Amino acid sequence: MALSKHQIDRKFPCTIKDLRSTIHLDHTPSTSLSQALFGLLNHRRQSNIKRLSAAVTSAGASVFAKTQALDNIKSRIRVTLGKPKRSGDFDWPVEEFLNTVEANDRGANVAPLIGYGYKKSRLGLVEEFFIITHMLEGHTDGLQWLERNPTQIERLIKKSFALLRSLNESHITHMDFWAANLMLCESGDLPAKGIDLENCFHRKPHYPSETLGFQFGFFYHREIYRFVTEAQYDEWVEEALGQYENVNLENFKRFYQASKHTKIGRKERRRIFLEGVLDLS
Image (cartoon, rainbow, N blue to C red):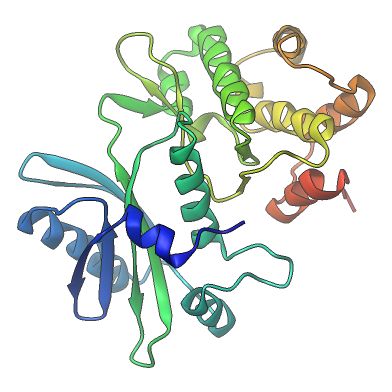
């Protein structure tokens, strides 16, 4: 169930505005940080790019902002009215925001969310949506870390699988779980953190074994295959499965094997979670 506007307003009570842009935050920012945030949004528009993700630093405060333009009238109307698509899903930027709110509320290992915002057109329709999280200082994404430390592939795998299990136990099912969508601490032995939660569900999967098989297979398919043999990866997956209960191994293996070697689009991934179907046509 989506959060109500009242619930969202309580989480992000501070509102700042600049012309037709509005940002809602969980705290009052400094004037310089506010200016820096609006400056980033203006940069995206002037650069004429659809999506932009970047760190914003001002007066010693660092946050991470991700902004995306809504590219058609239907999505603008839906987001303005707070309505989902016919499928029941919200548009991708709103999905990411709602999933990140839920993940934070459940104490999941993800980047802490501090706000969101939007820009409206002259007609009053939302034409751009953005979310703002704490900057994960001292962290780097798993793929960059692995490129620099290819011999430490097992360490990355262990931390990644631990994060995947932690998210699944919180009923945050990440359907775009790959090395670049997790952040590793450069020093110390802290748990990894998940990012980019747009293609996620914040409820139990309808088909848990099929979904889990996809998640493990997809993780291998997205770049990990370059750093480890398939046989070794299979061994690590088998070891990780020992921490899960009631896995239907036949269904798991069918989706796992297919997902290791096949490009699966975002919509097809959602069908795995909702219908237990892998459409490779």
